[in-house]
Length: 282
Image (cartoon, rainbow, N blue to C red; front, side):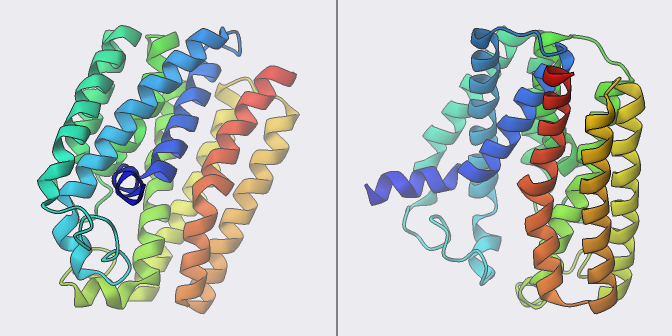
């Protein structure tokens, strides 16, 4: 059983679950809430397989860096609970291939989104900023897969959904790096945000938080949502801005960690859930 848990850990089930959730929500938004259960299950399964494959691949590629970080050195690959690390490749590559096949069955555009996202996830690992452009492309892939499966066309709404992900990602990634700044620097990782003073990095993050709030408000107008979304999106945006301002004032690692935890499901998951509930209820 421990071996099974180790292999599941490599696939990053929490992260993959969040990506699958927002991908399903994207499909619901694209379809105006009028989707059959079978369609939703198939879309969700395709995104889950693709996400676990991509996350497993990045875990494999990041194993040497993870071994140098106190925060991650106990993971299955850097701790050598799975050794040699190549033992995970049949599973991860198999999931990537199956995910691509399922994405093609959803729609050729969904296949392209999955292919680009997976390729981006495996390129430039832990270099430059970690989020632009490779992280943003990978993060938008499940949203685009869900959208194209139902509505194979681009418009302002899907553009803003992808922009929401692209702006959210730096807040999520950089906040944990600031929280463990010394750990990253001691591991030899000196790209942004470790390459600048803490206060400067936090100021930039605060700017991203304001933009995130603005994008969530723009979605209210382009998506035709009601007062329900407007109120909850405002509340979520205010909470995020407050958390970033608190970090800006204190500069404390604990506040960076709180922003990191807040940005995951409490914000990203709930903002997508709010859009779906707005469509279903109103």
